[in-house]
Image (cartoon, rainbow, N blue to C red; front, side):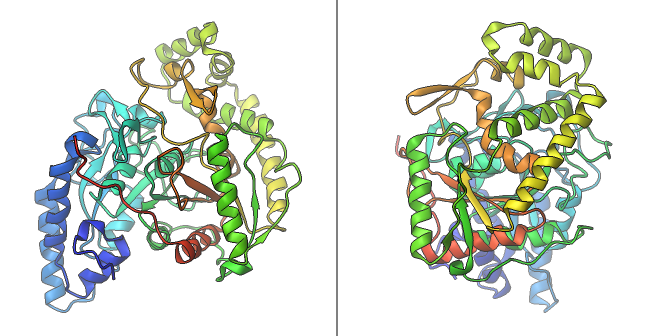
Length: 485
């Protein structure tokens, strides 16, 4: 049990234990979150929709059932916010899209339904970039979300509101989605935990985009939990994947000293200070007895892997664009200011089925090579993105077209903004599980995480590794709020 008297600082597991032991009621815990959100979210802008009355009604029933001695599920009474891409009955789903401002789903998304069956109480939605398509969180409906650790910097995206809400103590558990680092980068930037699930282990039905009613599976998109501890990620993943029709494997090991890990911090752009912090963390793991596996030259094919990933990513995006949006990409492709990404993405959004199949064949080859690599190591440690959270840079508009012209300062080098997709794109293209855990110390004055990639369908291996790291090194601290002006 957490020694803190402030329940908003508890992890989800700590809160659930306190609820089960009747040390706190569901209504009392909900009111604590609502009070904190009301007091502090004006500057941060993490939560974009609220329904406290409905949440309180549900929490009251949980309290009554607990007093009556009824058997309750594991999360019974735990208040939660949910990324505003997932359908939740009683709350809007907009994905930051103005045309969806009045949409009210009549059923829960499958992943939300699993959490509801586990007893979670949903009180609000968290902000996302327009159509969940940016590494910054801002949209025409709800505006800009700011990092609780430094309000001048981004929270990442697209699950940026979710990460900010966790870091600020508005919730202990969140549901995110990820196609280009959208769980992992916000977790990294905000100093919280996130898990990108193996592809097709958590249902995406009821997620926007695509628009409501689409049933075909996106070949890259996944859902996963976000939290303030690896233990919470593990509990939530089991709930979210409870209806998975694939066979999830057990964790390979139960002791840190039994793990074999590789480290990869080059080939793709990365801040040298951040890379050094990951290497320091790897050395700490070695001192704990974990075995370092040398990967000569790092995993091969980084540039070709990224080329395959970016083409598949924007081909799937292109399938949902109208003619006017396609024309914007075509125009961007002819603009020298968009650099190499303009022509690349303009071609990808109109890619033929034949070309897409060729990319899928290349994807399968990479998957085969990496599966072989995981015969000699259990997890791979690498950066989550090129660096830590950067200053807000979103006055030029919404969506991928303006992003083609942006840059991010990484060390002394100005990198193309969309290069930030390189590190997260690895696990996405390969369908692999990837857990983000905060590093023990800040990097450049901001939180930083390490990406822990594992073999396909071995989510429990990366999650167990992260839990063992928590036991060995402790968990990250929440930012000190409210801030002094």
